[in-house]
Length: 374
Image (cartoon, rainbow, N blue to C red; front, side):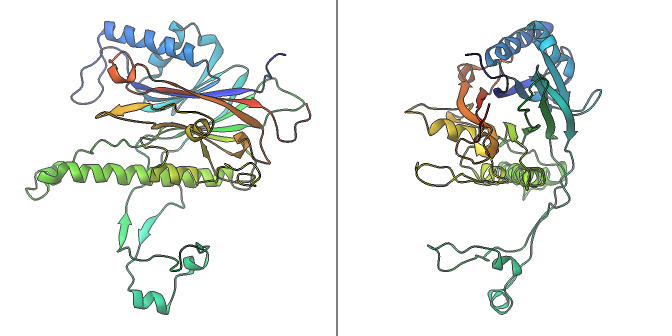
């Protein structure tokens, strides 16, 4: 029986600074020689062939010509269309996407500024004042049956001023060029690369301060964590606006620089409930929730260890695929069923400039609607 043309696979691929030869990158980094560039192009092309994915999200791209050269080396140029954050050149690293025929790019939107509804601000209130005049937000909180004390207000004042993403997420609308009766709804693909865990270098004003400089690593790490968390919240707001009260299939692909149980992933996913008991109704509906692909894979695996990155001998998955209820097996609104997630990570422990310091991830789904009639 031939495979259904509506089956679809996604992948995420950190390119580890893909730039043309003899072109500048970071202030203290050396440009690639022609030999280094050729080796990198050959390796990326071979990995794209191995991934064999319909939709690929890329991170750390300096120049579109380099990515297209890798596809040309793999003899895949005529099979894929590309989406970038802008026409022409850009400054720094960026995300990008490649979509394989018969799937098509129907729309591209770059999200640089944080959305209108983003604000990280909390005012200080005494407990006496809170008891006398409880915040309206408390009324919307469903109390935990195991927590008799209810909402917590121990936090002091906080005001975070961040207004845009460090690396713009790219929203790509993907449609099917030939499927009819039934047709395939447009899929919203978010290609993303959130702020890394590396300590943010302090500006000269702070670095030269003798009281601050000894603590540059702690403060720089805090800056990175705050920005990454803020970016996750901003993207979650964009996802809410995209997903709520719609049935649009949605997937987030990319390097979010945090693990599956991190606060960042909790914010991004919206924490929908996974079904682990067959007789339950968990997961039947989740209007704006996203299910982490690595968790879907772990729930059907025995003893495998998954990772996409290694830093100081710690291995974890920081390159993710998060999917909406249309890709979740137990959802009443399911269109695709999850088949498998693969991790290509043999090179990670000894990555060279030609390779990537991240593993690549491929996830694929079979077209099996919950109310299938075809």
